[in-house]
Amino acid sequence: MSCEALLTAAAQGLFPLEFDLNTARANPKSLVMSVRAYKIRPAQPADLAELVALEQQCWLKPLQASAETIQRRLQVNPTGQLVVVLDDAVVGVIYSQRINDVDGLSHHTMASVEALHQDNGAIVQLLAVNIKPDSQQRGLGDELLEFMLQYVGLMGVNSVVAVSLVKAGIKPSAMTLTDYLQYKDDRGFLIDPILRFHQAHGASLAGVITDYRLTVNNEQRAGIIIHYDLLKTPSSAC
Ligand code: ACO
Image (cartoon, rainbow, N blue to C red; front, side, top):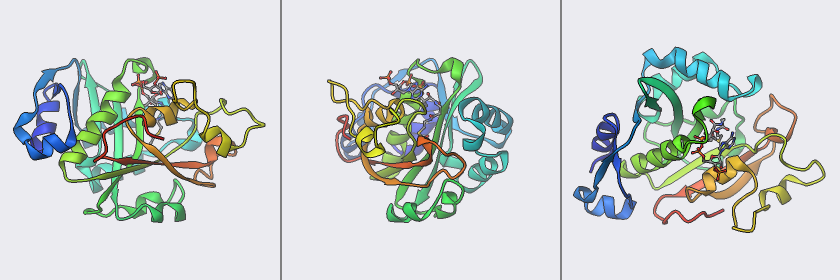
């Protein structure tokens, strides 16, 4: 199945029952689709007001993307911004851009990183995943992220990165960020829920940008570089 066909199906609420990128690339007709309660489609300019509201509900003010930034994402890379729709309402979004290399990220902050976008960049950078607070903890974030990884994988992309943050208020103040990033539970899952969200999809920690979010002065100032190797089977990496 092509990435376009995958997206057309998702816009009708049809998703792969199981997905393995190598198999899907080698045998595009092998995917068996099943119906889910929600749909995923590219974000459109008409969604802007809902996307701005979602940003305000999901992030503290210093971490919010402005309406202009969201609008630019929709214009510059329209197929890289996907929304999840439940009962005809937008309840989540995943934003992305294309970049040429991972090393360039460490020369940027949250405010400047979107200058790295290149239409044909080999790597997809996830810019943010937002699920409306009253729709959280139902698996929608998981499924939106998983869909994005499948979609870009079928585009031919092998590498996906994100500059994540840790959840505020969980890291003990006496603990260094380096130690916190290694801090796992007895099942091997990271203690931090945002990093665990990525880990559950096979991401690895690939570095830290110390002053990535200059608008905050707490543990969320650091950018945690997360890397997905799409050719490896997801296995709770990190
Ligand atoms: N804060 C942080 N992580 C969460 C939260 C939360 N409030 N809720 C769930 N998660 C993580 C956990 O790891 C959870 O797994 P667990 O149940 O084993 O703890 C995992 O998400 C999967 O749960 P879902 O129900 O699929 O997640 P949800 O639909 O609630 O979406 C998301 C998760 C996107 C993190 C959502 O809570 C949200 O929008 N938070 C605010 C914005 C944010 O932090 N976005 C991610 C930042 S990283 C990035 O954007 C590149």
